[in-house]
Image (cartoon, rainbow, N blue to C red; front, side):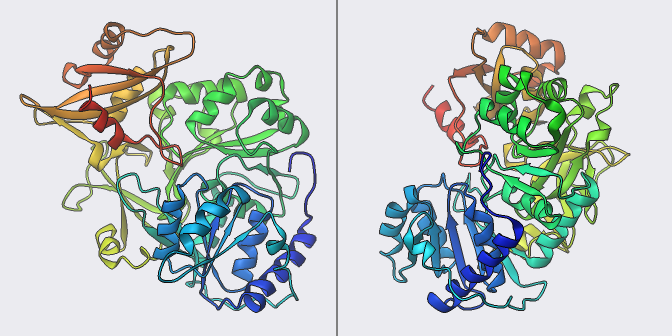
Length: 484
């Protein structure tokens, strides 16, 4: 935590065995019971995960930014036996957790009740590779979240794939936890734990560029996961500009699409240390990847925004609405086949059958693949705009608009149009100190896109609405259209 060592691996192992003993023998949890983690990032997070698995239980990490009612839905949906929560969330969650037909015990990990769970150590419970290990609830931008069932085998193969494809990790490496440990940052930590590497948390619990610069100076071979909004904050920081960039091993980009301008700026500031990764909770963190060595000095803008090639042990193809593979360069839905793919959605057989067909996970993401196997993300299938009978992918319009130095963020959606069916609308956030006009942005689009793809209007906002994992809520943007 910052520069304070909390646990060695041997100390953590002892705590894991004792906490597992408390979960089983003090609280009476049984093999297969679900334990929800409603926690901000904490040094205890990893010991809790491993204690849950040591005891043969199932971890259900949820984003701490969720509303208490959203957490209560997950508690009920997964039939949780216990919720471990950080202090700021305990009261609201406990109020709702105790109001249902099946009350759930809530324990604060920052208080004496958690400390009392450390009991006589128990031996590791035997589990099978296909047993449930982690219920990964989707972010739920369009409705109730679904729980992707990840087995011990899914997590093991995900862990190995990172080591195969991106970096040779040793105990001289360090992982800086910037994103929520309930999601990609926590999943990615398993590769570093497998190799005995250091896990570091910022004291602030947030993304403070000055604090991160100090940590970069302190820890060598440092890797961190960062969404585009995080990297934009870092590359514009004078503190980062002055820190020892040579201590950074890798920056794993993910969580949202990176524009060419984002990638260029990251490489300009950090050098050849950027990896663009694409995955989903259903195939955790592991669909395609663009490793560092492919960002050569002569790489084109088009290749800059590729999410790379299929990861080790993963088959990727692009298919049409009839599930037929399309030609190279043609757009379609990204489909994935791998033993890393989830075992289905918790208690949702119909949703599972719709998503996993003939052994292939249908991601709902639109993309293209060239004849060398490089993949480009377009958009979610539901976000494609059909105007005058032609498909328009918001991502290609956003790419162009983001090339304007004055644009901080942009999101493109479609709105009903009597003549064309749908019209393109761009929601734009200006970079601090810059002014933008619809006329200049329109000219930029006319200079770089087919005329029918350019936005019919521009809406300027101070900030884009996002969910708890940082994804833009296009449903809210479409609702705003009715107000403007």
